[in-house]
Length: 262
Image 1 (cartoon, rainbow, N blue to C red):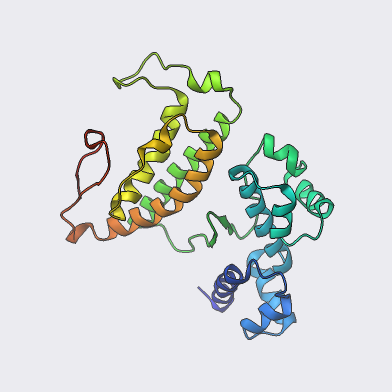
Image 2 (tube, rainbow, N blue to C red):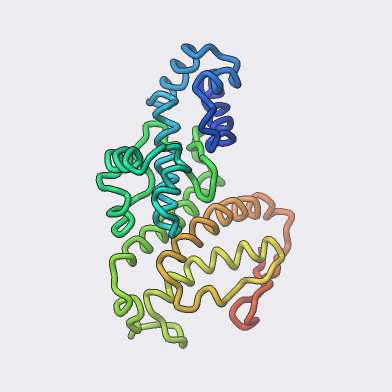
């Protein structure tokens, strides 16, 4: 990393901390980085590929999109959280970015991430993620595989949102599992597997009841919570694999999960 990318990484850290402080101006952010406003705008724009003000606005819109698909919050509340003074102003900005008004997009959502040269996006539940800037090694490859798995589960959930309850609950005739399965139950289990891992890493019980006829909204919300934690904890566990002998999973019913050898 050079001085500019170091500054950009610091900017992302600072922005994460003041994302909801809508009184924090560009001058305030520049001061926190010990830069003049001119130099601040120039450095961030050169690395991010967009001015810092636009960068911040995009992140807030991505978070708003996440709120639309994972909560039932009124649109005006989401607009205010994103720093917009009116429903109309938020609707114009959101429609320009995502191609449709918030209420329309909520019923037929697409990806919550907007195209960005820096590849820095809002990462649920409330952080920003910098892309890797080093050559891919063994651990980096594993991280990318886990990231791809989380992304793919999210894509399947988005496809499921287009189906009716009848389609989601239709039994799957060909299955290697003795338990009756449906698209809904399989998607819930995919998210649940991450939740089980996270529960084991935190030494707490996994709540199986959440998987009972789980809604698509709940699936999105759970993936937004469990996915980032799963990515973090799985990476930590692999990095300690040489000194770890085993980990035990605490979940019920006990026949549904077993100790995992490292």
